[in-house]
Image 1 (cartoon, one colour):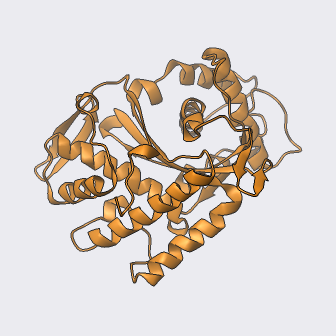
Image 2: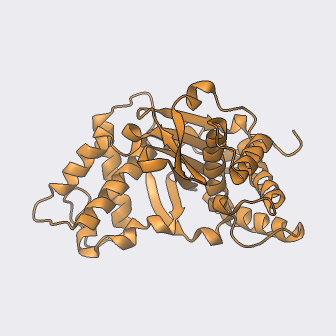
Length: 320
């Protein structure tokens, strides 16, 4: 069904899914955080978040998890609650929900479905790939594998709307891949009349089709991608929220596993402020903290087959 907003059916509207991640030591695991909003509401949400920061006299430069410290922790707390409040409001009007996913290496980086799709692309006739291009294509296959498995979990019920996937510009595969090769990427189909962006969308939907053959899901709806958008995270409060969600959850796990460094403690306190449910012992058993330097510890995922999802029902509003 299309997304319904009171007084308006957004049947033709796309859903903007904002995505960012935190990666465990040596790619042993990955935590993704997402926010999903009707695309036509995104400019208003971005503007309202920025206006709130100005009105409250909070910092107006980029909010990043790596910048959290004892001086700015209260400003970060207010910003986190502001974006959670927006997400709660959206949840009362649409089936869209923010989400965290936690995966081990075998589920994301080394999955056989990813390997199969990657080999299919590498076998396109008369194509040669540099090592850099091969790594880009594999990373893109990993990205689409995550989308194939988890994008439907951002919605409480099936929807017919297509998705605009919004990533930090560091993931801009559209610009990284040679244009002459990009038009050949959708498994050998020539698309010279298409723009680079449309080629990437076609490529992604082709990979999703490939994954559907590898892992049939007859009882689950399959999303359709309509656009890839790459933004400088400094220009998007929503992307900054994704970064904070994944980063704080990541550090809450580190804290639970024994890291008591000052910044980890601060981030764990933020986690306790806004996340309503503690991290389960079962999930924590999939991680360990290792000493990297005398002053720094690394988080490693020891359960390489780990797959977990956290949903909006576990997030708290400021007044809770």
